[in-house]
Length: 310
Ligand code: NAP
Image (tube, rainbow, N blue to C red; front, side, top):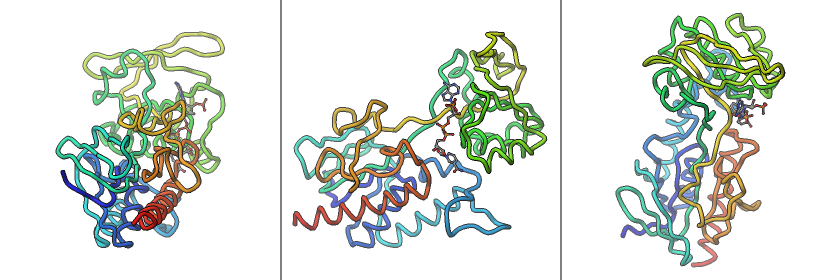
């Protein structure tokens, strides 16, 4: 069994930041990165609100930020393993057992930064058309919808940000939202309302995705009048929130009713020696900046916890 001092589970902004800090503290961290490094920002087209990396003529992309963070972590001695954690055993206290598809590890301390994933809408046809017109990532799939008509489901920051991005490719972007006002921040709203390619269908739920091989339409229902409709469309981009990637932690760490890992202000979980940072424990802010800050805090507390024991 491979023995490690610190294992960081996840490689988004929280995980890579924890890797930079534990690396600089000479703790030789191992990052179990998942199959793709970077978490959700790796799928983000433009990041204009992360301080220090902005210029009027050059807004960084998510992958660019990830690349710098990874280089910085590796420079300070972090090692990355492209594998996924399938189970953990925290029951005996430190050292903890962490199992991936490929290996079993022991670690004196663990920092969990496994992040969150896009929530499904949960309507008929959605699953069947994933990759054939249904998408959860405009940045990844927008290119395939050049000259096409798409809808965006949701009214939060993600829906509007991705909707704006999709206007680079699609002829039209229709935002279908269940209420008559957006949840997205004012700056994004202003840009969306000013964009000629974007239109809005308010108070409306998407009830089914239909097609023949690829998406052809969605069935809708007006939530005030109950009127049903058919909206012919080439693509359906769904942004209705996220869920934490905490299935492998069920019964191992205390969680809230939505599966978010519970931490205190020192990023400690219910198991001493196991810390958590980023979206796996943060249903509120969910920003790169806050994940980075939580990653710093978790790393510093891990270092303190280990040095007090040794
Ligand atoms: P969100 O803020 O939770 O918004 C989810 C949207 O989906 C809401 O408009 C919600 O409607 C709608 N929705 C939820 N369940 C639905 C359902 N079953 N059917 C139809 N619509 C449904 O999620 P998010 O946009 O992914 O953002 C998550 C967090 O990340 C937020 O804190 C956000 O500020 C942050 N974020 C920030 C940025 C940025 O700063 N640039 C970018 C992306 C995300 P209601 O409005 O009616 O609830």
